[in-house]
Image (cartoon, rainbow, N blue to C red; front, top):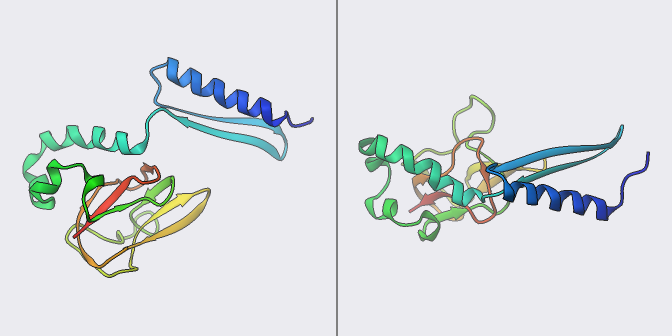
Length: 161
């Protein structure tokens, strides 16, 4: 078996993107096998994690407004977290993990004091665990991602003040 040309892979990905745009699906993930040790893995998403995160968080906030108020500052809750001056953004696309391994204690919690360079969370990208350090010292005011959630480049991860 010979691997199809690069052009056929591009056409395949474009067809997946077109299918995604025409359907009500939010994401497609496909593995195309070419042979025993040769394959193409494609994941196409309609929405960036930045757009998806507020949509998931918004329904939860009205259901329990009292617990959410102490954890976040009133000014920060109303504004877009990405525009907050203390926002720590994702340097890459990947999956965010709040602890070093499943079941372990989280690297940081809301209200925790952090030092510059301290690991805040891990982003897994291409099977590589990337520790995300605190760009500055301060107090963690909000954690904007859930453990195991996908993140996009530039997405706000947490807020340090």
